[in-house]
Image (cartoon, rainbow, N blue to C red; front, side, top):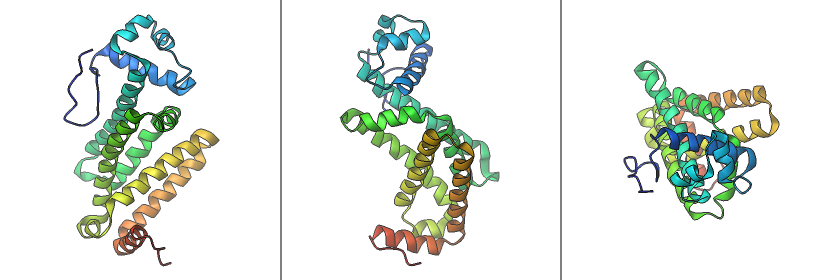
Length: 225
């Protein structure tokens, strides 16, 4: 198919996500890939999920590899859109930092961890998957940095390396999601998340402490207790 322009230079895409059939195929493919894995899923099975012939799926996607790449971008962008909508809905009356963190966690919970695990695994040997993952991670990092900037305030944000701190936030949220996926203990994971949010808020109330710790960590030295 003819390649569609990128959406304002953001998420890479090669098909029209606004086409209802394309969106339905991408949603069905995400479910199949999460359920059976990339290698064990066929285009015919994805078509069967929707009651479509394999040829219809193949019409929109030249190969399973192309479909995998598109599913990655499509599902991740839906994830980011939910976060951004939650932050915008809060408006100026809410706490942007806490809204951002809670929206991120809600989006992680609504997302498919099984699919993410497949993407992480496959990207080791797939340069295109890795390239897209890097671009999508950067978008996610910017959303988190905006939340952290609001949490720390102008003076704190100027003194704290936001990039490594946002990477830490992403790592914690991903780790909690995997823990919930493996252990199936929603209540315990939720408690862990609330504890992390409280620690983040405490650091925001004492930006100098957080600044010293992150700067020391960035320099490769252990924080002073």
